[in-house]
Length: 381
Image (cartoon, rainbow, N blue to C red; front, side, top):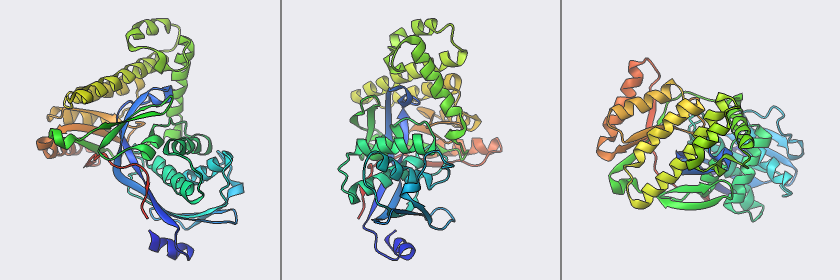
């Protein structure tokens, strides 16, 4: 990274930083409703070599895109002004920092990422968080990881135009090696939960279906709006305030709302409850029982939220038929990845069964790899 930075910009970088992608173990679309999530960081990272500038120019380059250096004046950064493509994510962070009153006078940034794009593994959040961390260090802004995550979310919401919750950025900024992050997305209270699957003879597989999705296409926003409509109709600030035990009564009170709103409410309230059940099982050391909750969660995402697809359903069906403890889609859906909880001894056979199921359906072979709980954003050198 440093050598490529020197070739691009003719000087040494002031440092190199890394921020990971993530998978979400449980708690999907709950962050849009101030609820609970449990992501873990992946070993796949976005890496940035960065130096400050004093002339108000932002220069961006990606090793992963066949494009030269992108140059933008920091004063010219405009939210939602055709902000598409990879450069919008680091540029949006600079905009968000400046909007928050931090004096960012420019930067040279060279990026490279091993986080698969379009796979539901938060490649965009990794780009945002690594940029935010580097500029925080170089400009001595004094922001903590949670504050950096919120600014990165602001960049994606207001600059890029994707109405995501804060889970992806918090996972990238705050996860710990060997742990899952139990996060209350209302107050950002974190709890690092030990998640050593190898000690239990287990493995968590990620299956990237290679089906690409774009959350900016309106489907994500539609579900967010439906959840907010449900909360308004129930007279609560957010759906996390509806107790699971009161869900049947709440659905009865929504009789005048659309079927979509009622289904979205049912998913969110039951998904928050699934997060609570998983925490209880992990605390009790009953990790294998988490599998059936993953599969329950997939059914809710498929039937109530309707964010799954044929390939994601195929992963779950093939994996569970081959003996997996449980499986579900992870991330925003409409493609992307699924996770599969398996016995260590069965991992290769189950992965093979999934690949064979895709071949039998004439679909592109998925990519399968283990999810190893990894470190959050940090300075490399």
